[in-house]
Amino acid sequence: MARIEGVCREVCDATEYVTIVTSGADGPHLAGHWGSYMRIVDPGEVVVFPVGRFQRTEQNLRANGRIQLMVATRKVQGTRSPGQGCVIDGHGEIVAAGEYVDLVREKFPWARGALVVRVAGVETQL
Ligand SMILES: Cc1cc2nc3c(=O)[nH]c(=O)nc-3n(C[C@H](O)[C@H](O)[C@H](O)COP(=O)(O)O)c2cc1C
Image (cartoon, rainbow, N blue to C red; front, side, top):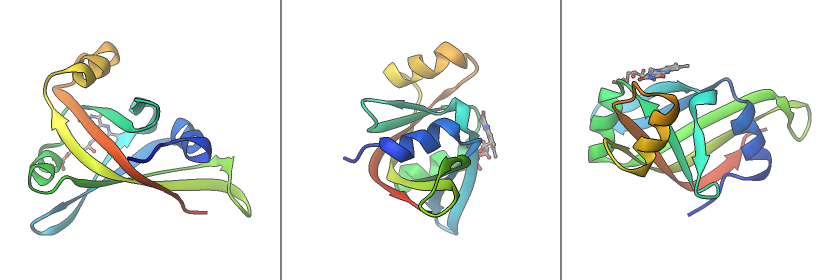
């Protein structure tokens, strides 16, 4: 288990949106979410999103739990210029009940469930 901390935590806090990649039988599948809807919990080891649709993402994760997230912002300094991005690698599942669903429903009562990502690796891009 890895952690989202330091510069990657700053990027997560500032990113406008999150790109979400899963794998299906016909190849990679892209979905997205708003950065401000992302909750980082369990000292940086778990990322949680409210889920409304995400039908295909859910289907993919049932067969193959690997998931990648990309976050980026110009507001965080990279090594050479303003702007940093991070790829978060992990294992994802969509759950319909439990502590993470209760957490997302505090702010997003419409959520049918929660996308829970257990972080396995974090890598800066710039
Ligand atoms: C910036 C952005 C924000 C999104 N926000 C939500 C959201 O709040 N809730 C939701 O269910 N889908 C949201 N979506 C749509 C999902 O990413 C996804 O495309 C849609 O649910 C279809 O998922 P599927 O292709 O896995 O079936 C958002 C997409 C983008 C690009």
